[in-house]
Figure (cartoon, rainbow, N blue to C red):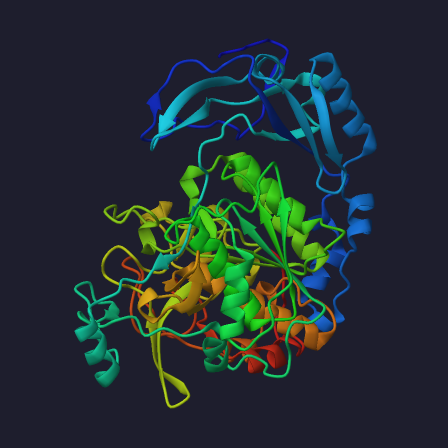
Amino acid sequence: MPNTTNKHVKITGSEKKPMAGAKAAGKVDPKERIEITVLVRPRADVATRAEFQAMLAAPPQERQYLSREQWAAEHGSDPADLAKIEEFAHEHELTVVRSSAAERSVVLSGTLAALTKAFSVRLQSVTFQGKKHRMRTGPIGVPAELAKIIVDVKGFDNRPQAQPHFRVARMTTATTRAKAKAGGAKTAKNKKGGVSPSAGTVPVAFTPIEVGKLYNFPANKNGSGECIAIIELGGGYKAADLKTYFKSLGLPTPAVSAVSVDGGANAPTGDANGPDGEVMLDIEVAAAIAPKAKIAVYFAPNTDQGFLDAIKAAVHDAQRKPSIISISWGGPEESWTAQSLQNYNTAFQEAAALGVTVLVAAGDHGSSDMYPNDKKKRVDFPSASPWVLSCGGTHLEAGGGGITSEVVWNSNDGWATGGGVSVNFPLPDYQKNIGVPKLGGGKTAKTGRGVPDVAGDADSATGYKVRVDGQNTIIGGTSAVAPLWAGLVALWNQQLGKPVGFLNSLIYTNPVARAAFHDITQGNNVGYQAGAGWDACTGWGSPDGTKLLAALTQPATAKGGGA
């Protein structure tokens, strides 16, 4: 449904490519009603505030974060800008569903005929994996008089935007289980030089509590007073499963609430191998580490619009006030528009200003990220944002109450920790002089944001005991690492009496903090090799939770800084 007008101005970076693998299914229904999100410019850019940059370099206990009320007043949308969007909506027979100065957004409803005309959008109907979707191609246009006000428009295209980063463990026969129980799991060099479970071993799983003990998480805290936000783009949880699971751990059932964003809902599919596995893994790992923290699950459709709206809803939630956001969904950088990369990144910067720590899974398919047969190096987004703590994965083994082996997670079958160098985000100040690899060669070689920052147990062969849709199972993936770190940060926040907030500037610039990690020096994720210090497989490594907090609260010995 093409619409063009000379009065429209293209939003730079809004161009969207055709959906790979989709089949044309005719025209969209012009009478269909949908909701779109219009993102509006801020009153002022927080990054230009000198106090913001100074805050990033200060230890957590000395930081002065903006309140959500301050944010809305100083950096949210100008009411005059919102009024102009509402006037524009009226002129084009669109309905204002809701408006938020803090989130800098206006949600509009209307027919596809009215909306495509208002924003000069090209749409067509396609099918992908048996489901019908609206596919947008080309740029989005806005009236010239609104070109400086509107920064992005989302919701026309409803193709799946992200994938969950988890893997259900493969079970073996009873005979093999018995041998593994008697002899323990062993590791072997894989064909590509990485380290992975040897053939014939079974998953040697841990409860999240056991992993927390191995990583020396604070034992005298439970996350009381904290709220952990979890972003989910499908699936759901069952209260009965949570009750059964936490009873088995000897813990109280956590306080979990479902928050609807863009019509998303807690909707279990009944398939433990589907998105329910992601939802339950996230909740059970985070709540097992911080059992007294409140868990707010923001359910949104798996679209570019739904994902960003859920993140912004969590960041600016003045009711629940989460201090931590855990995200286990993502996709290769190249699958996002330039405008989306920028606006998600801005949302994470807003989180930093409010003292909200954002943890994101680095991906589960090594340095090629979702393209195991492709030798091209790429990283997963939003893990690649310089304003999040990117969480990579390891293969963890234990005995005698301690860690006996920890190497890069690489199962040698297309599953391995994500990691590498961004082609969209430049090298952040905090990553200078740590040896982030360059992409390309010769004069064209350049270095961008390196991921991951940290790591934790992720291999499904040494995964987490969880319960999903009435079944006890074992799940791994970097999806488990983000909520694991989220639970740890909740313990830290409780101990400090205030949020630790943005961690990257502290971890990278404080040698004492870097020494509080278990440095992972064995293995690779196909494209990158582990080594001493930071690497593009496991970042600085897995944490000693107690030592790391003590280190982070010391004054940094080098200049901190943002992205």
